[in-house]
Amino acid sequence: MIVKIFDLQREYESLREEFMRAFEQVHLGGEFILGQHVKRFEEAFADYLGVRYSLGVGSGTDAIRIGGLGCGLKKGDKLVTTPNTYIATTMALSIHGAVPVLCDIDPETYNMDPERLEEVLAREQGVRLCIPVHLYGHAAPMDEILELCKRYEVSVFEDACQAHGALYKGKKVGTFGKAAAFSFYPTKNLGCQGDGGAIATSDEETYGNAHRLRNYGQTDKHVHVVEGFNSRLDELQAAILSFKLTRLDAWNEQRRKLAALYKRELQDTPLVLPQEKPWAYHVYHLFVVRSKERDKLQEYLKTRGVSTLIHYPTPIHLQEVYRHLGHKQGDFPHAERAAAEILSLPMYPGLREDEVLYVCDTIKAFYTNLHSKIE
Ligand SMILES: *Cc1c(COP(=O)(O)O)cnc(C)c1O
Image (cartoon, rainbow, N blue to C red; front, side):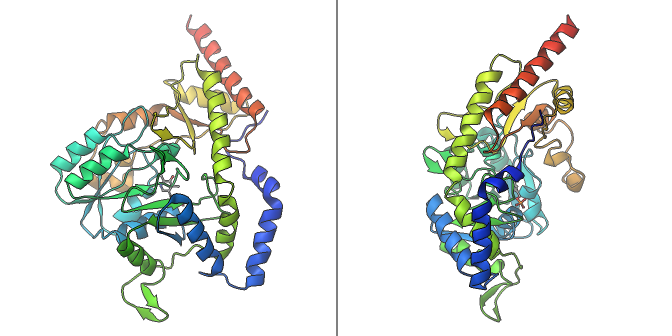
C-alpha cells in the first residue's frame, strides 16, 4: 500500500466541479485582481473567525510581514516567538530589520511556554511583538500570553497559518491578538491552488496599514502615502477559497476522526502521541508523534510505502541565516529535543481509515522488530 502524507489529487477529484465553476465565474466576471471574489471571501472569512476584517494577501509569509508591519513593528524592534516553527514566522519580519528573540516551548504541545516567555520579557528590552504560533493546529495558551504581553506592553500577533478553525476556550484562534496571519498554502487546513494568505484583525488602524501595504502603499488610485508591496490574493484563489471555506469545519472534523483512530491504534506503542488540552479544539493540521528511534522509524515506513515528514528538523536558532543571533546547541533544549524526535504521519481530510490502520500496523511491526532485535 502507498500512503501519502498529503494527497491533493484526491481533493481535486472530489471537488472538480466546484473548481471548474470557480474558474468560469472569475473569467465571466472579467476581474482578476482585487475584485468581487476577494471582497466576498474576505467578508466570509472575517465572519467565520468572528473578527471585523480579513485581508487577502499573496501568502502566509506576506500575511506575517504585512500584518506585523501593520501592527507598527519597526526596524530594530524585537519580536519574540518559538524556535520550532516554520522559518517564515521570523524571516517575514527579520528581513525588514526586526530582531527575533526566541523562547522555548512546552514539550507537551510544542507551543510557546508562558513561563519561558515571562523570562524573555523580563530580560529583553525593546520587544514590541509576540508571535505565538498555533503549531500543528493546537492553540497556544492565549490567556497567559495575553496577560504577560499586556503587563510588558507588547502587542500580540498570532501565527495561525496551521490552525484555521482551531479553538481556544471555544473561540477561534486568530481572534485574540492585535492581528493574525493565515496561510492558504495548498496543504494547509484551508488551502488554495497556489500561494495565498490572509490577515485577520478587528483593529481599524492595523487594518488600514495592512490594506495600504499590500497594494503599493496606496490609499486611492495613484495616491501612494507609504512604500508598500504587491501582495494580493488573486480572484481565482479567492473564488476557490470561498467554496472551500464552507467545507472547512467538516474537513477539520474528519481530521479529528482520523487523529482519534491513530491515537486508539497507537496507544500501546512507545510513541508519544499528540495531546489536546481540555481548553483546545485541535484541528490536526499535522499529526505529529515522537520517537527516540525517529530516523529508523521514518526509514522503515518509507520502505513500506508510507511517506512522512519532519516539521521541523532544524530549529530557527540553529539555522545558518540566524547565526548572527549568537545561539548554540543547548540554548532551547525542548525545541531541540522535539526536532530530533518528531515525525509527521499522513494526515489530510481525504485519508482513508484503512490507510491509517495500515500506517499503524506498520508502526507496530517496526517496534516488534526493534524489540526482538534488542532481546
Ligand atoms: C505555512 C506557514 C507559514 C508560511 O505560509 P506560506 O503561505 O507558505 O507563506 C508561516 N508560518 C507557519 C507556522 C506555517 O505553517
